[in-house]
Length: 391
Image 1 (tube, one colour):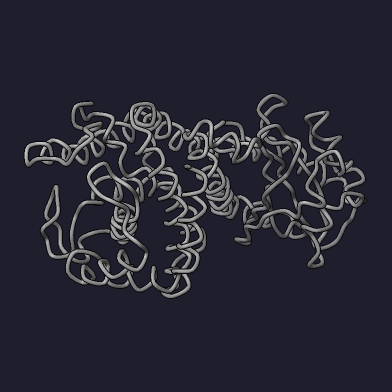
Image 2 (cartoon, one colour):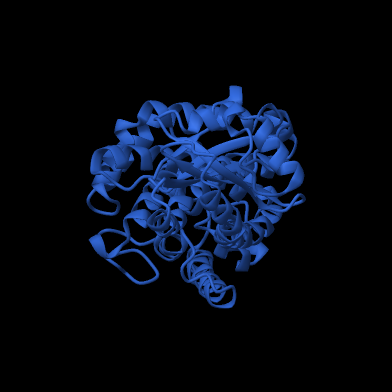
């Protein structure tokens, strides 16, 4: 992955302590990488069907996603819908000679693929790698497109020749699809970075929200059968719910004490500002079909709505509020309760969960609160990790 925002910072927690916004990026980076890997099967499915219709021995396509500097291949995504993290022990590019040579030449290859432990791991269910093709360029390397077959048949030169001709075209389509996701997330992260520069508190809040939302979404997925990849998508876009604060004056955003009524009315404008930003981004960057766009719009525009209709800006009720927004609202309140503010002490976890119980079914979604209870041990550990990192 090529954009800095979607790669973990190798310096780790020590660097994060010195520069808190790096810790924010470090947390979101892992979710972004997983989210992008999760969008790839939908890109591959139609392409795999067309290719296998002509060459039945090609049973699926897959993508090995590379890290920022191209030294590791960290995720495998394929047209069967599988998305998984590559084993660390075999993920180094230079320890997979066929892939390494294809990357060096930046050209498709069908030679000596059986020597690579990573390709053997991919095809461990009985398949065989037929062809690999680099995605991107030497300076902007995204990963490899892999054609898999049921039987390795190097004598079928007609098939291999056609796959070599097609593979750069398919690789470019995958590169463009991944690029659309990068454009969406990168644009949002740039906007949010302006908020981080002004307000350290918002930056730390964003990092915690990403982790809490991933935990909550995993629990909701188990309980309600939500789609694969839902947790990664919500961790990425749910944490960006407050981007509209870029349009709030410093006198309000950075006010050290409690807000008066006028202050609150001005702060509430961040929802409409954020919603307008997303609308303009959708139109000007042509991101209508970009994965995650619907989630982003919902969490930015609805994260202050309430189940009973008392929220803002539209006074939505119940299921009129998107599930992703109801989840963000629940976690947003939890984080606000358990963190120090100039005008309040941090609540204990027991106090925070009790307050959420009082709000459940009235202001916030009771299923979200129940799921948060079920994941309380993970939430408590994440809270402690962030507390240690920020002090």
